[in-house]
Image 1 (cartoon, rainbow over the protein chains, first blue to last red):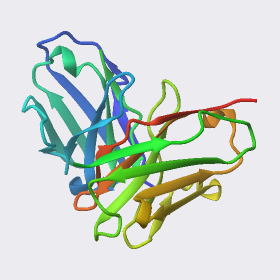
Image 2 (image 1 turned 180 degrees about the vertical axis):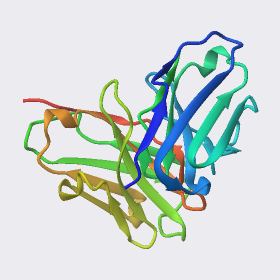
Image 3 (image 1 turned 90 degrees about the vertical axis):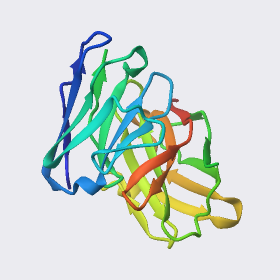
Amino acid sequence: EVVLTQSPDTLSLSPGERANLSCRASQRVSSSYLSWYQQKPGQAPRLLMYAASTRASGVPDRFTGSGSGTDFTLTISRLESEDFAVYYCQQFGSVFGPGTKVD
Amino acid sequence: QVTLRESGPALVRPTQTLTVTCTFSGFSLSTSGMCVNWIRQPPGQALEWLARIDWDGDKYYNTSLKTRLTISKDISKNQVVLTMTDMDPLDTGTYYCARLNSDGYYLDFWGQGTLVTVSS
């Protein structure tokens, strides 16, 4: 079974800064089935990115997904106040990573 | 539009069985490619995938919890039901249902979640 690890655990940044979030798989996975979710306190997760690099409907273009094989990255080019949240990667609609908190 | 809503007991006693229901609209679980998942989240912790049921009746479970989980669907009611046996305080958390888009295996619509506390 694939295990996903995310780093760092917490990313402490300021509005306007760039955020790079990493998701690493224990074995090679298809980028077609790698997705990212954003979760704010007290809310359900929201789909951000699927197929590693395709933004979901309504997701601003400051969010970019990339990667292949075992290493994937979510980049937020210029943080806005509403981007401070926890971000999870997921593989094949099942296994989740432990999350990265952006604060 | 697609919506999902979870319902179930707020409090469950240890060793009891939890039954949570996902009622959805905007799609049919009899349509090819449609799948519904259950995911849970203990307070302050990460998401954990629990189970999935597909339009064709196929079922998939978290291997660590497989012996305790049963997922089922009622097409006529647009509902998916998850039961979890032998509940423990460590099972306390928010239980979410979500639709899986089987083109890319991503969860495109989520319910708001239902908080279940396991306590005597």
